[in-house]
Image 1 (cartoon, rainbow, N blue to C red):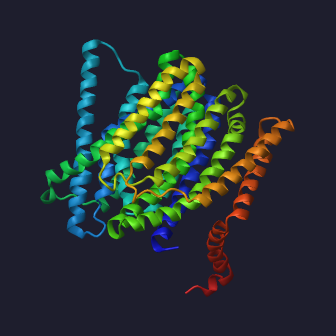
Image 2: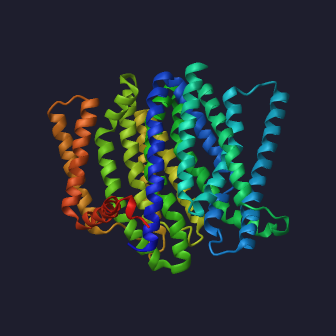
Image 3: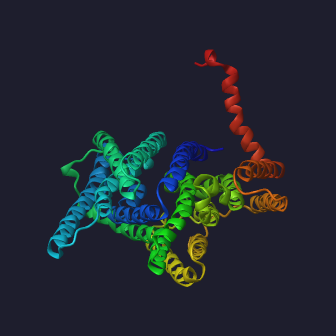
Length: 500
């Protein structure tokens, strides 16, 4: 394994570990919140959460994409100061200025109209600038490949947020407002650390201010910002349309329970891979060219395809049992939603990584067009399927639009940058998937009841069966596993006294 692939593997292990621990926090909070909050309050929790994502996507103006693309990896102190000044501080200042003007405008509207916004609205408004700030600092930490620090912050932040949210819900009020108050307090606490880190690592210099450089960076990032806004709309549109077409927050709650857990799975699969892959891929493309990037993709896609296929089939077959166990029988209606959305959440990143390259070609407008087309598909299908099929109509609309987006990336990217999973990997993964599906069907014929037994015994056996099939079929996976195990065995065998 070459140095770049090892770098991706190291970052992936860290991000995957961090995201797994974050997912664990989600698995702890998920059953508690779904039991403490009724469907209406949980529907409000998910509904306003979507608006926070939208506010953050708008407020960053695409600066995070410019940071990833134009970070001076080989630059000296002067280049780093210019980068921090023009691509970090100036966009951040613009975001705060726009936020302040919007707050003043909303206060004026309330004063003139005599209406008053609710507590949930102002909590979302208060969280937005802190979320923008922490996101930009997080992007700098990622592009400088500080994956260990990112992991520590992500895990500690999620668990502290969990404690504060549950404490507010249990001790103050079982409501979405109390839960968001805990989130706001967490953002304030970690905002102090991010300010300290920023002052130490990102130097501002008035002499380095170059507005043309900032405009060029934002010109690159703005199409991506619009793309992110559309992506957030794509994620949230089903909830908004469920509320609009049915008028029932309880149905939004049923959908939000399934989709929020699926998003946790997406965080583990999608974020872990791309947070590890993108900084290295950008550097490899800039220094070694297209062939090296395709080789890097090939090395990443083989294990990624097997992992995605395995997670997809297990979640598809046993996801409803997980919802039943975690949330109780009264939330069982969310099980099929979760199973369906989780499958597309773990498979789509394979296509997105295979077709990655549009941003390297600076075709951010093409990315925007693809995401916008996916949004149109999602909205049209929601409009048709929600009245006919309810929450499952919204879930199938998300599946169709997400699959179309992944395929479109592979179709429009330059051929010299496209690298699909190899045929051997695809065929062997399909064989292993079919064996798990056959086993799950057999369990159903045996009459095993949904719940703990099916999840633990059936899911555990199915996972073992999938892994055994992959190891038996593909010698490359066996070799990769040996390469990962040997250094640890050697380290244990040498003992602490032999080091150095």
